[in-house]
Length: 307
Length: 329
Image (cartoon, rainbow over all chains, first blue to last red; front, side, top):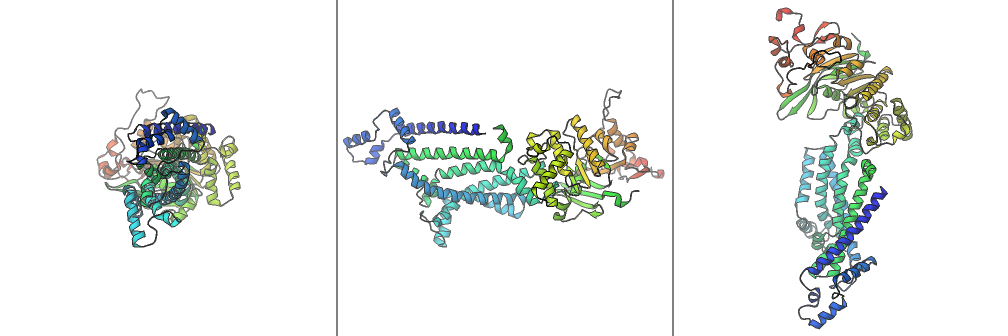
């Protein structure tokens, strides 16, 4: 198992370098000169040329890439054109906020999603099932920006219970966590429900009942672990998606996170910052998949042996 | 007539119904069974004749829309029908236990087999984990699992089909139930393993457990059972001591079943079959449910459902051919 994990890790490094190369080339072939955007319309040509030389943009592309990679290995991702600060420190402070948002949204999504899914499955066809599944359907079908604005209006503006925007205290993160997490909760509860319903039809569930276990024990100790196999994969993918930047949620609630930083980088043609955020997102997604695969083999002994 | 106190389980007039949009069906229709202490009783019949449903009803494992319509299931004199779920949980696995057809899928794939077995003893006897583990290992030894200590930590996918069925039997037997219901326990196994499992069941029976063996395989029934019930379309068509049934089958259906068994001594090149197929429960024929397929069908078979006649002592048959009151023929 360790061998397969190491192989996956090596593959991940290769993917990461590939993505770095791809994004590097793409940012340089798209039209629009970043220096001109940075300096504004009225900059004269000699200043533009001087800046281009200073930033090393006049060098051949392979030299630029080599410089970038060697710098990145040392933790230096260059300096943001638009903000004038090192990309690494910008990302570090943004990541703090994104992490808080993602963790709270994920905890909300997992707890509510699994709970609703399990209760719906054991009461399939009943009123609780309809209520929970309606709640889930709303979560998956309502766009995040709309959920966010409804929450802001109701709990922030109308009831004055929670702040509408910002990232100063933990109270700032409650509404964004719900807005972002509801969507995932909906998907998780629907997957949990359908998988659990399938698992409850399995022969070993009948065996567990025939042993004299109560229905609660059967569901919690025999069915749920088998149900979690596909759910864990979905949870990991969703979580890495949140970590790599919940662009809409962060923008609507004015949270200075990775998502907002990416938007800033794109609109300002800020190449170092954009490279940094894209590379970071890639790394997070790869890591998320790696963790979900490892969890899978913890949950399912059959995979442990094959690996 | 055996006295009631000698009965492990007595099923009286059990009917099971399923309500669906298309209508209500009765997969088990007025079934009565008697399982005396220390005996092996067989139920034989084709797939879908209601034999597994009868077993599940005895275990209280029927889930809506399937439910017990009427009848009594007496376990040592106590009626299990209508018992609250919590009381039924205490009965299941402890007084009656069951093993299923599919040892491949009958064990939880993500739990160690030892844990699955000692769970049964822990839930009923509330003993500490270490003691439960010892009991399990002892039980593994008793059912012939080699290297029981090592096997305790195995996962189901690491064991062969025969070993898994032994694990299932260990699980069912660990609380020493009065009755073991075996629903097609050897159908998924190859013949050599089948012989071993049947031998094991006979040993368990000698040690005092009554067994209800459900099978479509007449050979298996003949090998181990003392008394046999033949089921068709949710009803008992014939019941007798195993020798009487195999030597002189009375019901045309039973005779058909026995003729369609292949034998080494058989001289005819073509195997006999029973014409037609099992009726749809939603559209059961009027009168005797076997009448459309029966070669000896009388006029009234299609109109009146026959009661159980007892042409020979201890040998009952549900067929108009054995009505002694000939005036009605």
